[in-house]
Image (cartoon, rainbow, N blue to C red; front, side):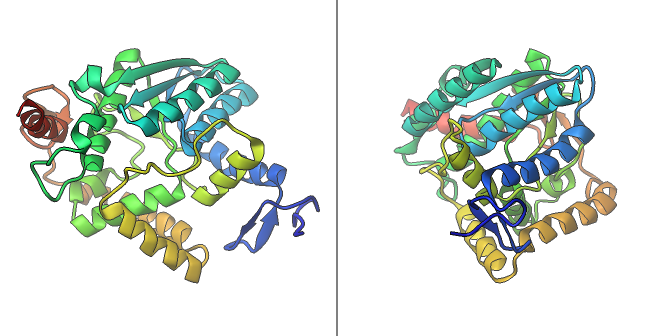
Length: 309
């Protein structure tokens, strides 16, 4: 039985890039230290922080850390949770976890159905022949869910949206944007200042925390949350995730180094990356976009044609 390298208790995880075995308590202290450094930078008195709570391990731990940070630091920040129900069986199960956690923490919690907001659920389109063969249900789900979170949080009065994106998520997103040559997305990557007043600033407490660390702690601590990935996930992200995992296995610390390098490079060149990129209001919904019609409205138009057949 391996012992914790810090306190001698039974270890639950081995951190390869640090060559360190940690117990449940020491792992949480390590995660808390990294999360607090982000929260201390991004939250301040008077903020209303809405946590995008899916019921999964990452967003659940982000909610716990955010509420704990506000209480321990004694800052005047209101914390609430927002859950988007995409209408899948997987989400129904995780919503139960989200409700249990917010009840335990005494946090205000709103659940909004995609069906009510957009007019259809992901379950309704999942089995249909999609109009664009290069897109999957995940494409529609991701874009439409992000628009919902931003719009609802803004109308709720939120000044910050706290997400559960961990280190693995962020390096995957960076590589995907790089592969696609999406300069607009790269210019906004990890930006602390939203390019429009209609976009609520994002806060990512777990940005320097590996996904396996989150999973290990949530399981050991018995946090009510789904630990696995969405079973409906498809597309480019799966291949990129596997490639990055392989690189991390061969070179411990690779993902963290990649994220920090991306932060430095994009921060130094953000102004140039943003040149010629103009944000305007979508002609249909009024949300900020670089095109005449935002991506969410484009995708909704495609889906409505499929549903109405």
